[in-house]
Length: 136
Image (cartoon, rainbow, N blue to C red; front, side, top):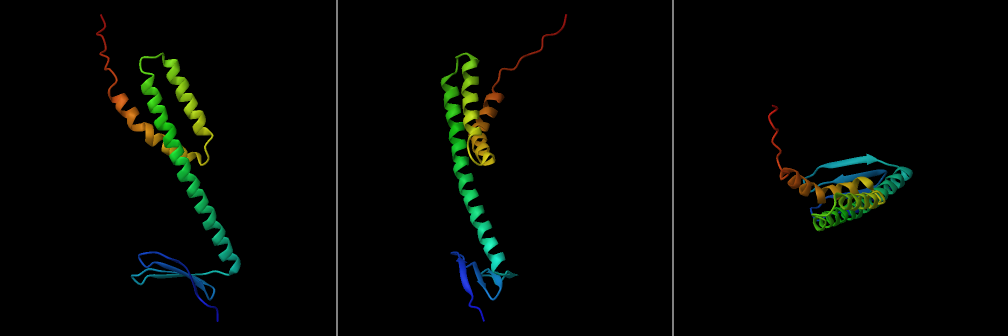
């Protein structure tokens, strides 16, 4: 008979155990789910969980880096008000280029967008309205 080992417990009482060829998750409310896993499958699951953890950590770092680039862009564009548009386009180009170099592109782009979307929406909403001249 194989010993059961608890491999995860949280503050709510959720628990994951391994033993007797099963991976078992239990909730404090009595819900239990068991999956039969042999040693190779358990190792593959462990590797997948580690990979997922690393990806999420990199994603969080990339999202923060993207948000920082977006915030920097907003500040730079504020400083360029009244300057030729070419300077603003250069600033945008530089930040987008830096964004493209970050790991986890989706997470980085999400952070960048979160930093600039509200500013863009506000700017677009406050664009001057042009009245169409009546044709003569």
